Length: 152
Image (tube, rainbow, N blue to C red):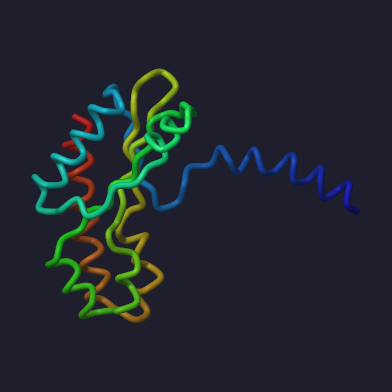
């Protein structure tokens, strides 16, 4: 039985790995990693959000002598959205800020991706109801605008 389970896992896991990620928006670009990081930060600000957090392993790894592709998570939100989300669901605020993810590709280009805000907030709609769903849809539009601006 264990042998069959191991064989099943070897066959199925690679197939799952090729499936697109549910709830994600993915924007491959011709920009370099550094260009895309800078463009994303500018686009966040231009679209009425604030860069709240930044985290990535690339620089820390380099300081240890380990070279890895560029990798940065940029958390974006603003106080207006924070107050509005809290009015609908205190629990949902655990998801703020919502994050953009900039990754460097093997060919020197970079990709911008993110979980859509409606996907991120979906588990909390039972508590926040239609007002939270509406906020998430507004944020979907705003995050799409940020991404489209950053990758152009």
